Image 1 (cartoon, rainbow, N blue to C red):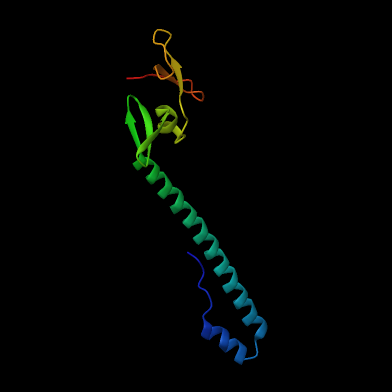
Image 2: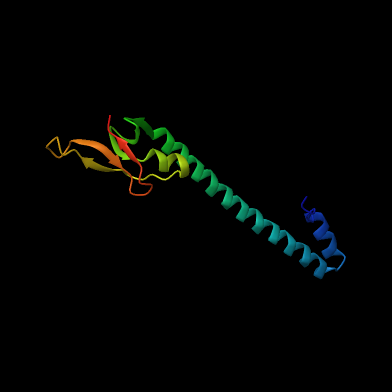
Length: 123
């Protein structure tokens, strides 16, 4: 438990009694406590923001065909590796491995992750 901080009345009383050095020490402890609270508040705000971003990402992310896709407006972005996202929250875009049997730029039967080396069959 944190020590009690001096009150305004206590500091005024010390000043009226002529104990200005002691009053200054109490003022210093108040400033230090205010600074510590400000730093804690900033850290908590950053933590809340990070959690809000994770929630927003999770709401935009959906599984389709065994891989993750990110909804952005009316379109989707991806695909992203399920293993990397689920094990560490990493959004790693998958590379397409085109089929040799199907000509054309948009034919893909396999997605491969550069990071974890996992492969996913396009469904």
